[in-house]
Structures are given as C-alpha cells and as structure tokens.
Length: 117
Image (cartoon, rainbow, N blue to C red):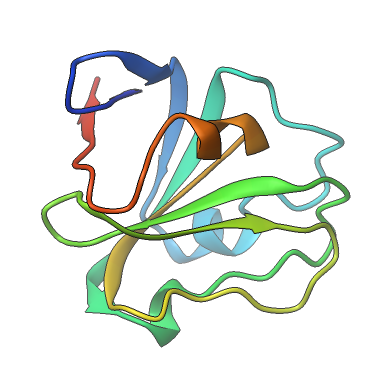
C-alpha cells in the first residue's frame, strides 16, 4: 500500500495495513530500524483517543506518529521517541500512521491523506 498527500505526492511507498489485534500489538517492536519509504497504519474500528494510543516499548528508534480521523485528516502528530511508554492524540482518531521521523516535515495537521493498494 502507498500513502499520498492532498497534492498527490507519494509520502511512503510500502505501508502495511494493521487491522488485527496481533498486527497492531506487534507494530514496530523488535525491529532495528524503519526504511525511509515504509510505514504502518494501525486501524481501529471507530475513532477514539485511548484506542489509538501507542507505546514505544521494544522499539529502539524514533518514529513519526501521525493520528488521522475517519476522513483520513491529520488531527495530531508527534515524534515518538524510542522506549517511551505512551503517546496519544488529544483529539479522537481512527488511524495511526507510523513512519520515519522525516515524514513529520512533509505533512501538517489538517491535511488529508490518501491510501492506495
């Protein structure tokens, strides 16, 4: 799967859609790094704050964490630091896009993203 911004520019080339409990639980744990063109989308059944919170236990590198609402509009962004216990959006979100830290420089809150196979 690929991720595009509102202008149609490709943000990430290889994105894994994580909608099962196991895939969301595993996330990026136990990996050594993330490539510049890859990411994960953690998918929840409905928008919320608690359900889209993330942890960085067993993730030894920083990542971009980008929370999106049901319309795939960015509602919050953070640089999630390695081994930190908790990150959450202050606004309800349905998706969390995790990718390389540099991704934070290429998007902004309020921007709508698009996913394609």
